[in-house]
Amino acid sequence: MKNLNMKAARAAKDYSQQELADIVGVTRQTINAIEKGDYNPTIKLCLAICKALDKTLDELFWED
Image (cartoon, rainbow, N blue to C red; front, top):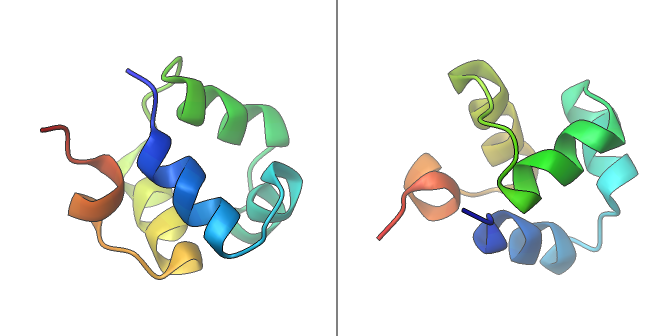
């Protein structure tokens, strides 16, 4: 399932996929795969993304 919440939060911070990837220590391709729903990140990576985007786990990764 696509992660539109993460994509929207990244856009709101005006971060490119590459900028977010650099902040959390992964490749741009990893960020792209998470947003497309092709990759399930580890909890550690989820927390790093949440911290970088000032969001909670529920806001970015919880599916309704």
